[in-house]
Image (tube, rainbow over all chains, first blue to last red; front, side, top):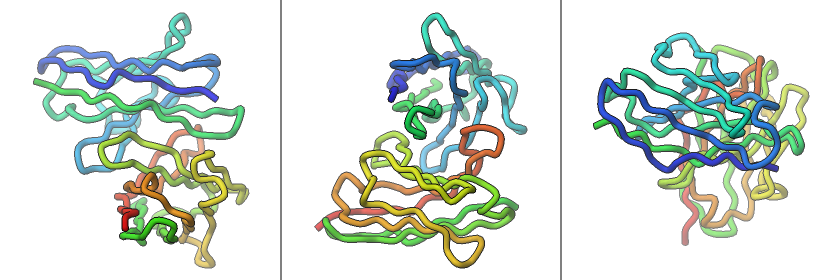
Length: 112
Length: 118
């Protein structure tokens, strides 16, 4: 079993770039795909990145994902920040050792 | 339009039971893995159960033995039977569809609220 650890919160100004990290506690991050979900207040989550770095249709290219094997972490980068990007972001992966789905604790992004 | 609609949430006493429903439109449940994910008030997302396209079920330790995920007789209905509920089960429960290409959740319902309290 592994855990995914995210910072509780990040903040940045409109127009800037922010990166949210997601660190895997054990096993290789690169061994299972990572997804990122955006959840605005009062709404259900939606996918912004799947399979580490793929964007669903309709998600702007300001959103990008990557994997860093050296730090065993995944990152979500949002460039050209807009106030509408203010939301909670969750990373998620699959634990094949016990067939379970794992979420990070979530990161609250404030754009101010 | 592909859509999931949950129902069945409500207030239940500790130790009680509740059955949640998930109705689909725009696709056939049996073609996909289906999941329940919950979110306690002010907390993050927690995977609760999976019913895969082969009708196998999976649960985390926190609900195993208490929750049962099943298909209804109608092709587009799913149920989550929750027994021996405790305060820690208080949450919004989301029904979510699993992607056919990877282990992501690609469609989410709007959620149904379960409150366990005396």
